[in-house]
Length: 391
Image (cartoon, rainbow, N blue to C red; front, side, top):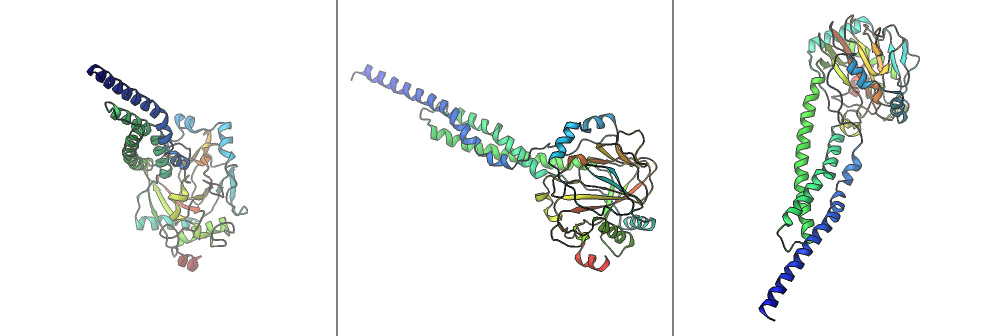
């Protein structure tokens, strides 16, 4: 073999290696998406499709923007209703019970609590002291899964592939296995970075949600006090024996969160929100699971402001309905109660029950009990000893 033959052979070998590398890269364009996109499939399977936002920014109650953004069309309402089953049973013969909306059911219970009990709840809350009402980031676990699934199947995968391709440039010995290893390494690193970013976003989101609520509140779990005891007794009579819940035939009060007294001063409000949680099985497991019912008692008369508005439900033909309002909007009256069902009997989230506490003009006091799917243990619920001793 002459020197010229040797040089020609060397060039030919180099050309074959370059051609082989280009073929490998072309193959990777088909192989890597299959390899990498299979990784987030399990993550996506757990992500529940739903909006990441859990409530709009605070607006003036009944503003045109608020109404337009949240008023459901007939087709949207039908879709929202299709998956929601029957609400939890209650005592339909309870004195003063008046249905102001059907499907979803919303009730007003007139003279639910006597004046002395209302006054006692306010007095005991003042004595104990109130603090800024907390706001829970409901659905944060679903949001993390959804965001992580989007990142894993999108930018993380493709940046991993591009990074592996770039690293292969100039490497005459690049092969499919080495490119796969580079891509997998890049994928893991980028996924960790994405997860850190998602965690930071979740923390920011949780902190910003606090601005949706400006009231102050406290929990009254001492059933030796007249107001708390009477409130829980009336609620137990309203909800009746829990024959369908877990554990069966347990005292109704064992499914309650302890009464919470909430105070709204002038201009304080609670922006549109939901009481149920799409991720209740995970996030609310330590407090009885899903919220099936909300019972609110108005502790004082409020002539100006402070109404309770359901932005996705039409106005009611009822004497305490705000006049001229297109949506269900109830004026507080001392001793009256408002009852609605954020989820059906099986815990299915009902988005139609979105509601808000409109900005107060006069001082407003309410007391609230949440009825959950399962027994609510202390410190969120009432102790078995207290229930046995006072109810």
